Length: 215
Image (cartoon, rainbow, N blue to C red):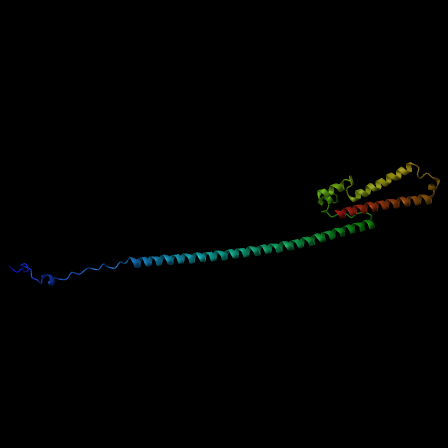
């Protein structure tokens, strides 16, 4: 038998003498650091926007508080001004009432001393002195005083009424008695008539003065 040897052309050291085969490792991937950087950037932007929004909210609240305080101060100032105006109006109204009573008192005193009213001021019209009253007050007062204008007209009407009564009494023979023909009786009767006229005149004037005071 022939010995089995290695094939020709191949030495037994050929397989061991060749260069060793080495495996190439894959290169490390760079996508992970980039993802971390992107997430950090979004987080920083979110925090920045939230802080900016919070600052804007604080500024808006501060401005609202300032406007509210200014508006409250303005309202308080208006309330103080209205209170001062009310006090001034009440003082002027009280002074007006006092002056009106004083004028009525002076008119009555002048009427007692002079027997006639003084001329009114240029800007005062006695015929329209009751125009300042409300309509529901003037209507009932004008009904019983129909035909009566100023106090002087009322006095004139009273005098005319007394004269008419005296003429009527004379026509009825009231003064035809013999005792009336005596001078003393005539003087006494004339004084009585004059006193009656003066009494009624004063009564009419006092009524007109009280009516004007009520106005």
